[in-house]
Image (cartoon, rainbow, N blue to C red; front, side, top):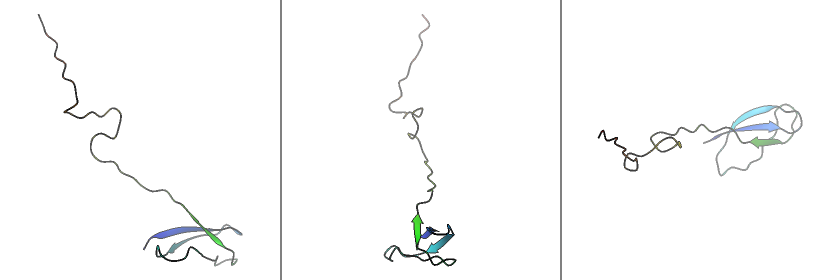
Amino acid sequence: MPLYRYICSKCGHEALLLKKISEADEARCDVCGGKMVRQIGNVGVVFKGNGYYSTDTSKKFAKKTVKSTS
């Protein structure tokens, strides 16, 4: 089950609630009883491997330049 961050629209109290995805998106504040709104949090993303940056090049597409000394 995912952990969601809720903020009360009346008093600003923050809470983390563990809810099922299929469960209704309604929550009440423990402090004032106001309606709580779910906030979208930051998601950590890790890119592994080659090809994620403009400076990365694949070996099969890299051009080989050889300087001739004649």
